Image (cartoon, rainbow, N blue to C red; front, side, top):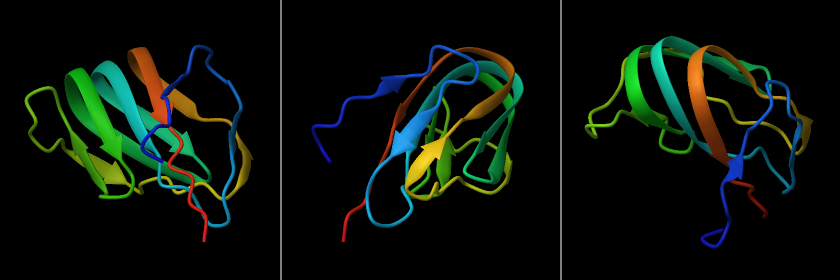
Length: 105
């Protein structure tokens, strides 16, 4: 919902619980440089040539960079099923947070 607070992902393998009735469409913010990989809920997305803060919007299936421009990506946008998941991040990532994007019918 609109009042949801971002969850800082402070550990490399911090489990996240997704509620809801159908797969979530999270929005993830990453501070990163170079090529980075985000894996969540069985889907893997690579963001290429990063430098700064990026927003991964799994509902709109778009990743935007610090200039608001669409970033170059490869792979699939995560849509984790309800339950517990551990996001896996690879690359030079200095900080990140996630809005779970839970959906209820």
